[in-house]
Length: 201
Image (cartoon, rainbow, N blue to C red):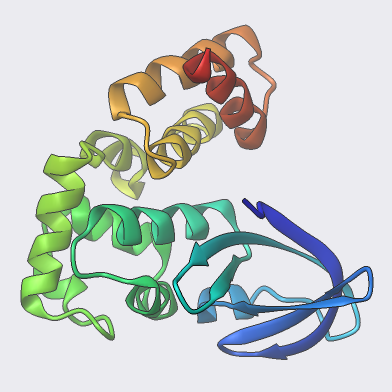
């Protein structure tokens, strides 16, 4: 799996970039939310990636933040009928925080306003992300209404990342909290790495 790319930003469009890594140009599809965070063309740039392997092509999707990539993975992995293109549309049409809040509230009407998401798909997103993945509790804690502390946010983000990688919520929370308790200063990516080691055993 290609986890991230670091190199020179050779080209940048609202929906795609070309990143020059050691003389090799990587074409990466991105959402508008990530485009807004890009540095000027010619600058050094790091992009988090998700590699989708199809019969006819290997396609790289890129994201400026872990929360964007985690949401993308949750949508394409756990919601039937949503592919990479629609997942990018979701990220282009709303913020991760707003999306989380809509799922927690069960607000299908708000989700349906996003490009590529109709009423039925919005309802399916809410049902499948709440019931199938059991993510509502973690997202509830991450919602603005609860004003989580910086420490809680790091653990919640780590749990979401682990769920996006396919782990069950209960296992993800147990592992993430164990790492945080033993390493209180650890950032989200370090918590995820440590938790993965515990989960894989």
